[in-house]
Length: 289
Image (cartoon, rainbow, N blue to C red; front, side):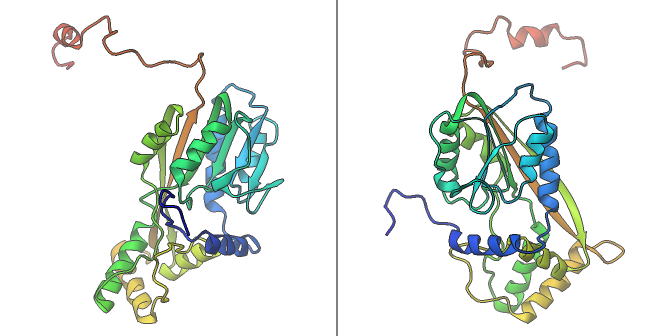
């Protein structure tokens, strides 16, 4: 029985582990991880710090570890349920305070039930002036698929069930980083569109990645064939190009923050400004304000 103060159980993580394990045993599509790892490398190359002690938390593959090495740093310790020297659950990472100078996570935090709590743990594991960089799927991901499935179920069954797991909203992530105690929090989004032959080809890719619905309160009934057929028709009608291929939106939300250190830039104290905005506006040339 869960404690009254325990976070709500949103995701069935036992089901998640079975699906991810099955996906990693086969030729799972890794285009999202490849894109994210390339982006991580670009981000690390703009930071002139050695980061001798780094952690790849929740690693699904070695894509992020290779990016850290390619940036000129030592290989990270990998910890997660599937890959790495330390087998650990991301929700209960077994590391002491101040253990790492750099912690990265590539698509490993999406299905965490207590994301604020895990972010606080990560902050605790960072040494002063340590850096955290992570990415996870964003709220605009698969909007076309969600719309087509919802409309098809509404038309045929008179109501829609949650068929796609929810994704994070970039607008919430900065506040969560601050709440967890990170300094200089930054969030941004990488949005892009891929094209598939049909809804069925897209869903096959998602299943192969282990990314099917794992909501605790998901419908236990499989999608009926007539609903799937209608959803494919809706998808093709609303979200296809002239050549008949359909579009699928993906969004990767990036978040980063530092463990506080006295050398970091501090925000100005309220009332400490030496110039007034009103004076600047009055002194600006015509047409500049």
